[in-house]
Length: 402
Ligand SMILES: [Fe+2]
Image (cartoon, rainbow, N blue to C red; front, top):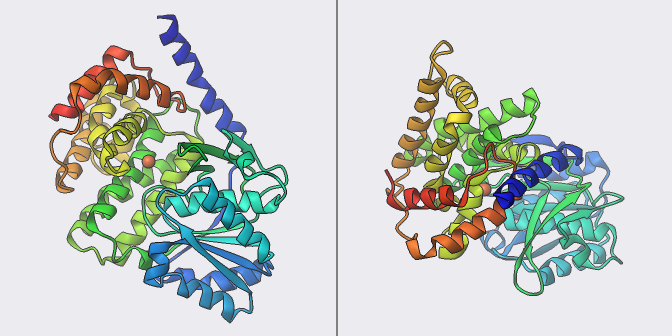
């Protein structure tokens, strides 16, 4: 019992910490092909040398060319670092920092998914202080005392919201994933360019969008005081995915729907910064790590059981969200409106083709997973703290489906 109460108390800490951290407030540039404006933005901001950071896949597809051409057209020298892979290591990130220093970069343009954007954050922090060991930026909280190099972030997936989040994950020298919150990150611009997403595989589109929706939804359910603006963004995140993911399942080249999911993911990133994630992420991180399931797919399996388990103490938030999404009327009782929200989530997951029940989950792993979930959930401020027995029950529910 003491351990349970201790965990419950500790979960108040992350909510208090995020309130004190300065957050980036980027100007949003949106549109098909919008990354071609990067030269103009850099010229306007007075940047004189830029390092473009991307991954091997985007580089191979030539998707960086519109960025470098735009910089060249505005007379801004740029160098390219395209060594990032899906699980970047501290060695690769340090090479990126050296590339930034070598070209005298005063701006980092990060073009890619979560791993590129996260690597770009550490490169931007490290390049500002080139004599500090790079491991300084892999601590739990990395204070960039004099800021970071300014970043222009261009996400190539609509899911993580990493273009505005202050967290970064890279592998340390022991091969373990190290999660860092960079305090003092500077991101003057974020470019949401749907052209980068048009050819994405359907599974990437689908599960990234579900991940984004979960960021917004978990933010609304978190035990954190939120501003009206942040609540509005988190609600919009959920609504945009509910409305536009079904469109993309039928018509993957729909530009408006692509832009809408990019915006949803961006709002989801705001939710992570200001409201934190919750148990859906704690379960999905643990299940995903143990069975090597992609993050968004693991989120999809965990989403409804975990939200349902918090429903009885978050009726009001779910009711307000259902009304915002046009699923319920304002005068409807909170419990039935909240149920409509959950029905809509379940319907969306069926449309996405999610298998009913996560058969990867093995009951003999439940004790190990419970420990992992307990440990990961310390990072969040969920609306209630589950006991170990409840966690095991939820794991069984996720395994069996409905
Ligand atoms: Fe996520």
